[in-house]
Image 1 (cartoon, one colour):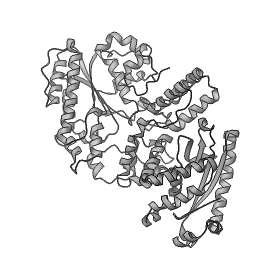
Image 2 (cartoon, rainbow, N blue to C red):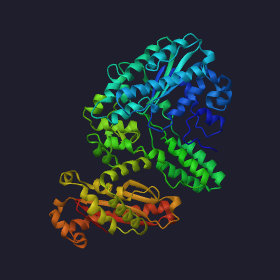
Image 3 (cartoon, rainbow, N blue to C red):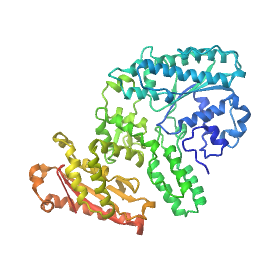
Image 4 (cartoon, rainbow, N blue to C red):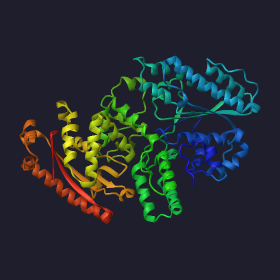
Length: 590
């Protein structure tokens, strides 16, 4: 079995016998959905492969290869009359450079479209009447001339636009010298708005018949909608929920095949599925209930490594996805963004909104009040939050989809709180000591003297148990060795932080850990910050309020331990830790 990691070419997948999760059965409904379709999904979620599949299906130049490409797929059983009846053209806006001033960006867009037009002419030369030369400074004129030529043939044009919002979003996220380049591109007679106005005009019986657009968010579409108000957003339609992404049944089937090839036991295959579910599953697109989806790029990365080595990849996060930390950094830079990022790490305090926002024009992004629904909706489109089935009051509930995305949150907080090399190294050594021995002394000492010092007096009014839990999660996080979770559900209770050794890492001298945190504001102790600093840990443990909190945490840990031991049996080497924070000043444990 071959896995098409990093390959978005449908023709290559089929003709070279790569694994392909068949989505061709959606072609019929896509034809009925409309002539101008918009489909939004997070980055690296398989959108380009969907476009490639549609290109190969409709391309009149591929008519001789229809059976070779589609006879074994679902659509091959009952193809639509429109197969191989179109000229196809594809624009990929991720190839348009976003640096420089607006004139440079406009020229880059003109250049890209002109290259696509020339490639189209070369490809379909025998089907087209003579086409005049390209206009280097005006790709819209070149495209218009080409569509006119298409209109003189028996066929129509199907235009595919991949990552329509890519370079515009890059421009918006990185303003140049205070100049609002984004607004210049999309407002008034900006090039993007003008381009989509032209697409709309050329689709009114002039040769351009269908348009399929993919992107990440509706931000750009909101700003150009007055010029292109014909697009139908199918992103929330339940029939296209899994147009991109893998269902668990598909992942499980592949793992079974790998298990046979690698001579693995059923238990090993089940463990691999559990690991993949924890790290890569969890996405829901749209409001309808249904199976959650796996990120396809990450799943293929894991499966390819697993098949090749018959073992898990040591790095659970593919380097090609690590760059997506920029999405969280972008949110963090917006007003109240940091607050929402921290809130998202606490599943006991749900992010609830009435509806997902769908208006993300530049005025909204740059000047409007960014309340929780606005920011949470943007995080949903970026793929760093996902929808659950909702709460009992009908509100939409959003959460972090899986452990890989949780890692991106943790790394962003780590960058913000511990940017210095020396602090990182001290934290790493303290964490390594804790992994193998359960010794909290170096870890708590570091959090007291370094991590908590990041906060100033203004932060104390917002301080609660979540701040403390987040500190430990950030310093201890390791998906190389552990399956880590905050607020693990255990028998209708919640363990604050669980660290269960990955199945493939149990060969090392690593302990499983379960931590329970309690928080006591200093005013409840009747002590000043200075008084708490001067007391020894033994003196602090002896305080009645602290003793009571430690006992409460210990009781919870005893109950959680019994449940985990039932689940993991003799494999579990569990060390439990009750930790009480006294403000953001001292830590005691027992």
